[in-house]
Image 1: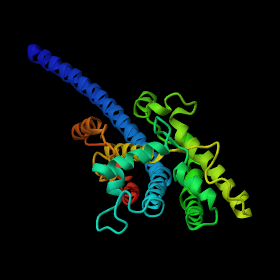
Image 2: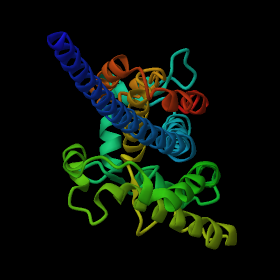
Image 3: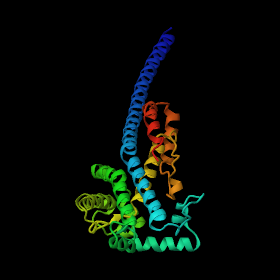
Image 4: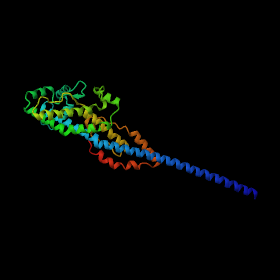
Length: 317
């Protein structure tokens, strides 16, 4: 009996110890689980904040800025082809897109196009000192009330009012929050601007200055009958502005794609504009999916943001 009682007491003691160990392990697991969930919830929250920030930038700044820049570029190309140099780069009335010859023209037309563009720009092809060419400007100065000069002034008034004034306002207000590329990458992509004081903001500052001076010429000179100047004297136009903004648009869309783990895919038309796109977020997205499968938590916060971005991602090109 004594042995049985002793064994029973020993078993009871062991059971109590095991129970205590299990309770302690449960507490440890609970703490670890709470920590893991808290950490994942925090990451999901930060991802949602980042997603909302980038979506707002896309919708309110970068998307509109690139659209305005692209529209103005196309207007300039059309004016050059149909008014300044009709029939030189493409048929005046053609069944094909005339800008194809302008940008990617082959043969003699392509050579003329390149020569004209180079004549318009500084050696590094970073800034424009004329939209018409110096020869055409001289022609217009000889006959400032003639048809060509009149059409030119009308065209410049239109693109400044419809495109470059709204674009310059956007850039002035939001220049310091735009998602700029890496400095070394910028220097590599735009060597002609690599020594500028503004560096990655250089094209934005040039656009603002060009618009201000061009508006002054329109309002203080043309409106008063003075047609001596056809283009800003101290402010060149940033030749690469549209390309720069297109690259920024593509990167921002790719980042949103990665943050939503491809739920919102970057179906941009930037590839049509010969802008290279790279999705840098693929690996991070894959890692996030793996963690969700392991812990089955923390996805709801990002999911709640999907609806916010769907309307942003659509129609911004």
